[in-house]
Length: 327
Ligand code: 2P0
Image 1 (tube, protein in one colour):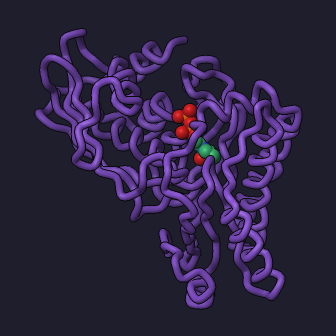
Image 2: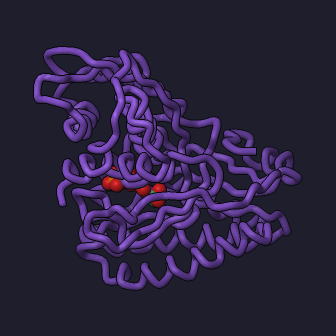
């Protein structure tokens, strides 16, 4: 099945009279058990399930309306040239939803996170775009369908449809209709995530390319599905029992294993910078001294620390530049 057929399967039955402008907000999400590797590249179907935590304060607000001639994309108030990577990627996604070939869109998106700095800006961006399209066309789709539509733009966007803990089911169907995200029950007051920005520069290798290279060339990747299965079990148990050490330990180990598979690829992918290693060693030192703090990392050099609110002031003393993203 193509991505266009998948989109039509979902939106085809939806009736509604388009509005002048659609608008939506979607949060960033940080995976505690990562999505790394696809079983279908066109549909962004993952090899494994994944589990994330949304950061409600960080995200993208997107407005979309109709226009003539060609698509127009503004990111944080700046018009993107039509042949830029971002404009081409958005237009390709909008192709899935054009009622006819002469319908074009004006899209404006404001993000509270730096684009392509390993902070999952494509996840909130495509989730907000899918939700804004639903508003524009007045499809009134359910969240499960919207999660599938968001996935067609970027895999991790499937999870940014929700707040809180979110599980994205890998699914087994070839058409991907069972590969959507759902919220996981479990409020966790006091759970904090702090960001350490090692670099705001755009990464040299996109996660899409790094993921494919890992699947194609890493022998270590063969162990990844079993690792994910066990980590998901532990994370669900940690969320249910509010076992912070189990949550932190599992998330940290999952991120390190993902990076190990990248480093094992040919040619190798290494997102870490010297400061990344310094900060990791600092976190481990603090933990050895009894401070419960863990980290996770995505496809970039930046670090997301996990800790409890009761320890926040101590953590801030050690990491004065930390930005608190969830508390
Ligand atoms: C994640 N990442 O679970 C993992 C961990 C990066 C590291 O999902 O090709 O931008 O658009 O489906 O979603 C980043 O990959 O990739 C990602 P596409 P995406 O958050």
